[in-house]
Amino acid sequence: MSIIVDQNTRVVVQGITGGEGSFHAAQMKAYGTKVVAGVTPGKGGTQHEGTPVFNGVAEAVRKEGANASIIFVPASFATDAIMESADAGIAVIICITEGIPTLDMVKAVRYVAEKKARLIGPNCPGIISPGKCKIGIMPGDTFLSEGKKKVGLISRSGTLTYEAVKQLSELGIAQSTAIGIGGDPIVGSIFTDLLPLFEADPETQGVLVIGEIGGNAEEDAARLVKARMKKPVAAFVAGMTAPPGRRMGHAGAIISGGKGTATEKIQVFRECGVAVAQSPAEIGSTVAKMLKLA
Picture 1 (spheres, rainbow, N blue to C red):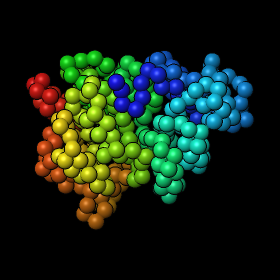
Picture 2: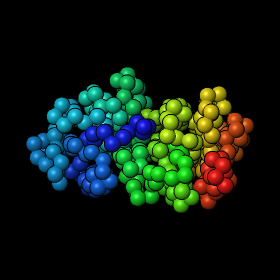
Picture 3: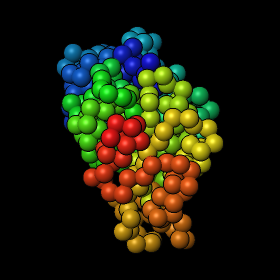
Picture 4: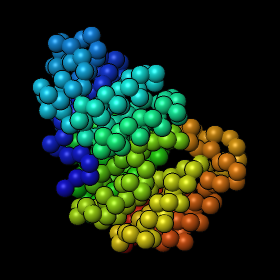
């Protein structure tokens, strides 16, 4: 069993003929992902490196059976691309694009929810079920499909995802599914949306949450863990030294009104029984201890 995506997922790439879309479509195919279609308006009826290209997502769904999409279009067109996927009946929408205005995302997130689709991102690395399906920009060879135990991973930070996975894989800890939810103030899926999926997944023995300063998503996640989860959860929160009122890395990583600090988030995690890594270098060892492997 996989979370959200698996070997049967059929992907349409919105913006496949652009540089980033073309490169990552090839990388996804090389990993074994079923990239069945691309979309670039005005280029319908052509092929791009062996993948059929359509003018719209609905045509890709109808002709190629696409059920997931990944978006590599400029920020000014990205919310329209998200809503086009939702309109076409796509079940899983991954938006890699960064720099989308917050108000545009408020509209897009509401629209996707009304269509009962799942949106991951924007400004995210995507999702991977190692050995089965990769929809995103992450380096697939870092991830481990089989190991001593399997953990699920949910992260606001792409870079820290890769670092955490490298540590886990070196310790022989595989990943069931890793999801980069993105670092913007408004994203399609948050920790509390995804944690219950890992709790229900028989292949997942524990979960790693990677958070950042800003907002209250980590505090909400900690309280959900305490109230509803039986599987062990570990966490790391980036931004211990961030000064209030200054954005650190992501658009959503900003402390406002004294709320959203790393110290506050770590305290709530610990109060809720979550094992917290003190530094990025300790993420792997913290998970290993949580799983009683060290």
